[in-house]
Length: 315
Ligand code: AMP
Ligand code: MG
Image 1 (spheres, helix red, strand yellow):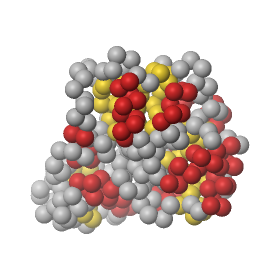
Image 2 (cartoon, protein in one colour; image 1 turned 180 degrees about the vertical axis):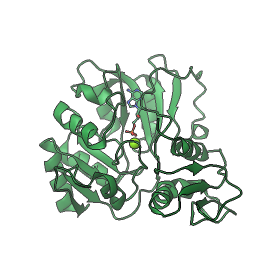
Image 3 (cartoon, helix red, strand yellow; image 1 turned 90 degrees about the vertical axis):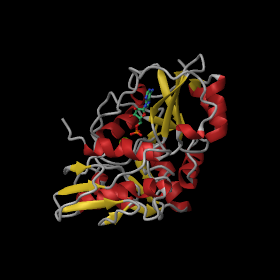
Image 4 (cartoon, helix red, strand yellow; image 1 turned 90 degrees about the horizontal axis):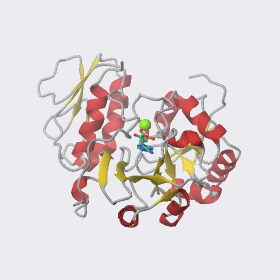
């Protein structure tokens, strides 16, 4: 893909991390591994840098970004953290949990990061490369998934190159595929402590016994959770038990495929392989993708959420 940037991919070692920090400080864009998917980072306090993220991804301006921080203590600089939010942060950060909380008026974040909302999405990621870059910049970093908006998310550096080469400054290659493989769980925490799941993810509601708080109505403020997303550019059929010869089959458990999410039926392994399988399906010469049934429990709920969006044709 062509663009205005000479995008370079470098190993996520000390020299690459130092370079990434320098690019970010001057307002550039760096793709880098997190434990969920590869993120496209920019300094979250610079409107110009954040606008570049939206432009590189072709992301609609109403879809706010998650702000990544170094530790729990930093959250209070950007948001009002009710006790319930602090409790969740202390239990799950660093990790694949994003908290949507009320933004502080003096947060100093670029207005585009929150798409004009009164709330902000915060996460402390666990991946050592992302942590090293956060520490080296000492900046809050906005980082949506490192792919063109609407397409399958990236879990390897080549996945990032497939849609963003020429559109960003630098890619840090972490070597291994991202361990969790799907985007963070997003919980909104209201000032009164009520908690609501805005997006299922690696941390499932079963992991949260403390979530006795009343669940609220589906919010007006879950922007960007579009019906069509993660789309491989061809029809996707879910819960496929019968398949045709021209189906690219994504298998699970007893259902073998051209590519299999988890032979042993392990849902965490399936989540980690989901986007790699969708990328293979997108690149294959078969005209359709058929996906075996995936149990809807635990992280299976997040896998099925992504698959439903992958199966929904764009408007
Ligand atoms: P992504 O960066 O693609 O993982 O998407 C981040 C998602 O977080 C967005 O699509 C929104 O749905 C959600 N999000 C971010 N900020 C907010 C916010 N302030 N309120 C509600 N949802 C948010
Ligand atoms: Mg995304």
